[in-house]
Image (tube, rainbow, N blue to C red; front, side, top):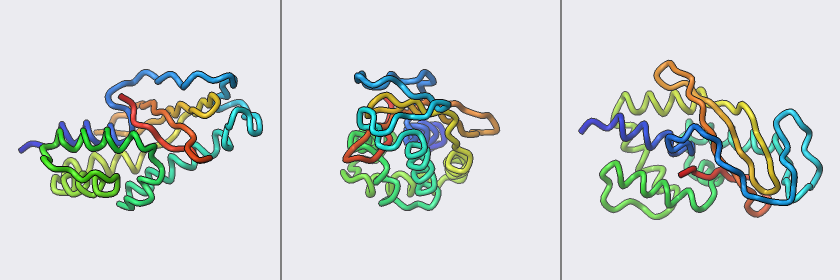
Length: 173
């Protein structure tokens, strides 16, 4: 079975692009947006620290993926992302995927690591992913980032939200 096209789709979905290059609209709040060039207001609308914390969370997530540290990777994801991950793994032909994030990550990467081209693709993404811009609106953020895939810089926009005082990544539909 030729896995590369599906694995690429799942790899990018892991990072939340789902093939959508348009930024997702942050949740509506009464707090004005803070762009990457503006200093966020302290504790404005539950800002939870702002841009630096979003960037740090994203870097922790990509490093955890590179290290195959599923506990750390899953700690940086919003709960709804686990359901999307499960659906993506089912697309790879797994008939009875695990229900927990760590098990899903392990299943996905077991599949990816068996295909050298797929492994190279995910390693290229995790190795080159970098945040270009963070826009915060209240408890939501839009993270514009890019990664080099097959020699081409690929822009991606992903959402994040505050859960229990910490920023968590959300997979985009």
